[in-house]
Image (tube, rainbow, N blue to C red; front, side, top):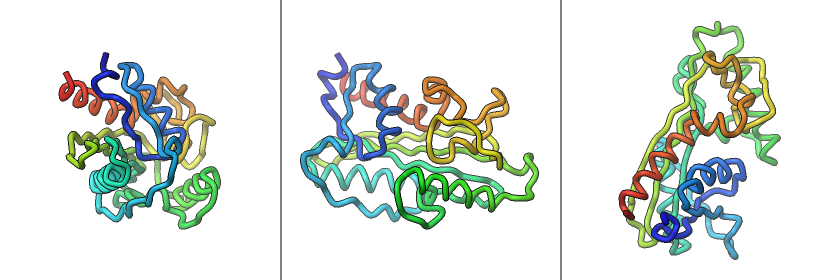
Length: 209
């Protein structure tokens, strides 16, 4: 079984939405992940000061592998809006500049984005979610890196109760819904995080076959 070869891998996040999305993909092949909340102690959070999603995913994976002595999987993800020069990009999670609970921060980030694109036509609002993922061994060796993208358009009318972050604002023309209106399994089948995780699973299985 894949789980016997891979064992339990630390997934460097406390975000329950991300843990569920990644866990559903990896779990289908028998691989088990555990989030930071599962640890018996807390560890210093690495400073994610990279210029790209890949940089930050690598910083996080290497930092937690070193701190915990565990094989670690990490990801960095965010939204790129072409009309805003790729913003909010690596600053997606902190775009509004406020702190607080996850729901409040998501709401403020969405409101700032809506203000930033106000007055633009839909044809100008091409955008994508990006997810970069990095897998590091317990000894600090980078074992694999993957990337996934999730294309759409920005809408200034949030819709949907599923998902999190900017999901209510990413409009998917081919299905006439926002990402937040998709059922979880539909989102995972096409999302940036789902794509990056499926590619990572193939690397994991190839290295442990």
